[in-house]
Length: 477
Ligand SMILES: Cc1cc2nc3c(=O)[nH]c(=O)nc-3n(C[C@H](O)[C@H](O)[C@H](O)COP(=O)(O)OP(=O)(O)OC[C@H]3O[C@@H](n4cnc5c(N)ncnc54)[C@H](O)[C@@H]3O)c2cc1C
Picture 1 (cartoon, protein in one colour):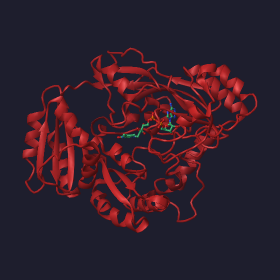
Picture 2 (cartoon, helix red, strand yellow):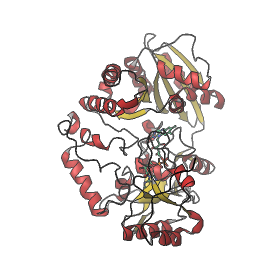
Picture 3 (cartoon, helix red, strand yellow):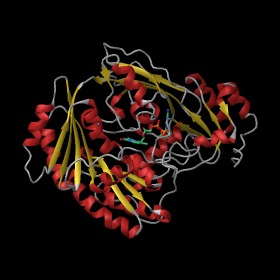
Picture 4 (cartoon, rainbow, N blue to C red):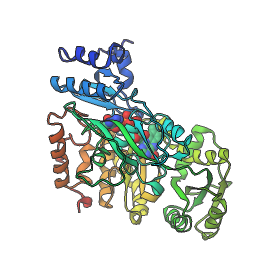
């Protein structure tokens, strides 16, 4: 079937974009452009007028200068693994792909830092810095496609936040192109620099609405090769939290603590063919990983031994690479297994740990009331109270179920987006996590930097204020 024609560009803009990036990197064939117009989940679709693939910061600046002159909107796309629709173009925007911004400079061993292009994937960065005896503090399952620019723009979290913090905590400097085509570049990597606003922190988590990140100066972590992973069965959230507390208190080498439930395990096993991890089924499971310069296995086993038998129902530990990967696969295969089962509504939320049990208990009823046919799969990063709420079979109740879950989260003093960002998926509900004053401040910053709202329209801030419920939920304090 012939793909529909791409939306027309403003007169003259095509020539300017071609001059900016070169003939080969201005893509206008609708069948090629179409491959950039759907997100990873298959839930969000859009329309781009063309795709541009600049090779460096100067070309990104030339693209933005031309777009600003024509008042053309621009959508930035990295690896397109984002889960909130932020990388999908709307209304015929120019799609700017960072796929060619892949320069990786040599690791600065003395400083433990590296400068990398925004289009470098997480896996490519890991290979590069590990060869120099370092590691990167952020890791997650989409590592082969997710880019550093996308991770910075969403302030990605992942599996090691417990030890190293989110992507923002790894950024020591940034280079970005603003909506008018001007370039800010601050890549010296000074760990101490109190000369006014922290531009890198501001751009981290801005979801492409304040500037296009082109290069990053990154803090590196030590390369810890001695690792042990435990898969532990518990009776539910209360047991998981007790175990987490023991592990945190007894294990300075603890790097990850990941949660999944019986339903998720069943789906993962159905889609991957993995065997049952234990002879008996259990309500909930934790993956714990320790890493150090010396073998952490004995410490991990001692910490598990210290847990009461009514908390720790079953456990298995792996130290060899293959065994560790197998245990991780039970957790890391969740996202792909869910996607293979249908197009999910994905809600990535966080609540204080004291509220986590209540939230998990309330979710099934809340979701059943909003979407009676829906199927719920939960997993997440338990140390941060971060739950990935995946709802399959929501059909035409996607908005209703989103509304119900996000209000429930707000009522538990939570965040409607723990790590994936707000994107297009949740911009209507931003007021549940941010006060009117905070939203006004965000709008003022955006207005100051991008008065014509050219960058990533409809992402994060562009939804109209809500009319269905009152302002600021329980989290506004
Ligand atoms: C299997 C799987 C597992 C995942 N696990 C996690 C996880 O554990 N933790 C987590 O946080 N996320 C996770 N994600 C979500 C996703 O991988 C992250 O949000 C990631 O940071 C997105 O990177 P990307 O390059 O794919 O960005 P994209 O999807 O291309 O874009 C994401 C957003 O960033 C903007 N953007 C992209 N590049 C730039 C740039 N250079 N400058 C300015 N704005 C830009 C886009 O416009 C968009 O708004 C997972 C996704 C999948 C598919």
